[in-house]
Image (cartoon, rainbow, N blue to C red; front, side, top):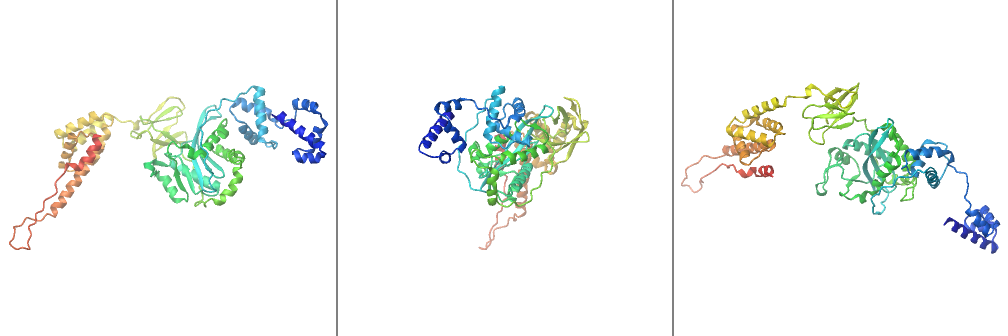
Length: 526
């Protein structure tokens, strides 16, 4: 195709020359320099054909960087030409001013020369292109995670927060070594607003549990920290519907861009260093290069868009370094560097139970979600060891039987109460002790009559749950209080008088209705 276009150019130049145009006039007409016009005119058709068929041996601007490029491609064969260009700029201050196409062609040549094939590209989802938004109207937010290689050959997972201004495509990225919580996500927002020098009118989010804890048919229930943050700011949060990635395609592309262009093939050297490097990358590449869709440079576009952003309400504080979170296992232990460390019984409260870990003076300090110290262990240098604190273990059978005896005493040790406790044990063997403790905490100030009636109701309706037992106690207590109030206002019966203006007053107290428990019973049986 190139040869054909050059032949067309040669014929065009010969035609214009025969019409009497000089070299300068031909140069302006066809859009090439005068020296090229002169060269074309010195060759006949056969000579021109031989000239364009010869391989060109021009000096290559990147020849002195061949070793570096080759080493990078051998080590990370999946690197794109764009990534190679960014790494050349990052590592060499003497890099000549070259076009991205030059880098692309040279990388392609190195791959072909040394047989370095690029792995097959994975298939990405296709998105529908939406209309462009005005300056300052919207930003989009999402999270990503990536496994990086460490200097010692291990793996380190990092988590990153991305936000992009929809009009200018100006981006911000913040990275940490633990999953984002509502608190750290708020801090990342504040850093982004400082970086943008303003706030967009609305921000588009995915339905992430960091921000919302219930979709509620569109009436989203925000997490406490995020709701407080939104109330204090001037932007409006907008949430995508589930399974609707097209509406936030801009930020999806940014997450993919950060993974494939910045993180992929980079060695982890610490979070502070990584955040410093990503800001340099944003300035140099992420925001400094022409965007493939808009064909504009985000950094230059942001200079216009920031005039339309809302003012930042508060000076964004730098997020304070937070302790990493670890999952609590069902056996109330935590795994740290291939060793198991015990925690107090009862720490585990479900699959999402997490604790904070602090390494200080060769000791591990474990904190609950309220940042209260709950355990301390010496760091083990072995692998697969169970580091146990004797205070964390307890004689479950003795404790459980003791609680069972105390609950039976509170229930009056009646025949029905003994039967109920045994049925509760059979129905909830794994959570028997927890149910006993719930019942025990409720029975302290409850009257005997209410207790007996509650046991009877639970037996009749096969309710074997400590929490529901306590709810029925509350209903019974409230019903009894209402009956007492009615008795206080009941007037004494009086004889009927002959006077027409005297009335006989008959007042009857309200009676108990089993239907008041229907809601609880329905819940328990279902």
